[in-house]
Length: 147
Ligand code: HEM
Image (cartoon, rainbow, N blue to C red; front, top):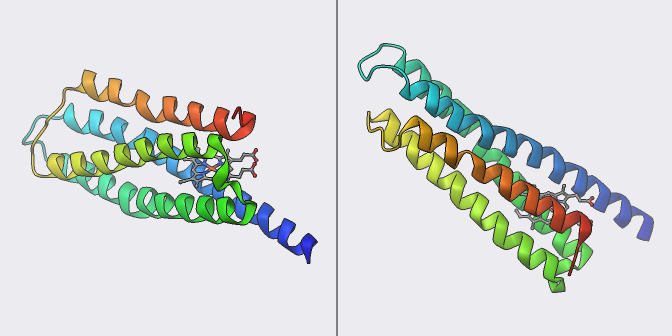
């Protein structure tokens, strides 16, 4: 029985890491799409193709991955009894920042689809550093478990 639970834990962890990879890939790609999109003149016919690409990336990769990462992550935390650990609390705080960034990106896509370009390409490139910094912090916390 213990062996089955341990196997299940490893399968949950595999599922978690698979969707972490998909989620991070999407979070890195979307602001790049925004930069290419915004480099077009506002009335260019290619705008519609970028709106479509952004929507697909959000609906096919980003939203399902966000749900799966949270689902697998919480299942791991419950089955491993990790909720008392400081590293998990710190990790969750950073994951909340990453999730807020995701929601902000989805909102930016809606504005862009309506023709509102709220940030410059330079600012979008700067904002694009957020997922990399968060991922580095999260991975250090979960692997080193420093507290
Ligand atoms: C959404 C909320 C999340 C929760 C509740 C959560 C929780 C957990 C838990 C409990 C583990 C198992 C730790 C162990 O067995 O040692 C784990 C593993 C892992 N998590 Fe998360 N996680 C979340 C999001 C993330 C995110 C966003 C990333 C990366 C950006 C991430 C990266 C990883 C990695 C790489 C592992 C494997 C670590 C190892 O095997 O040593 N997690 N997560």
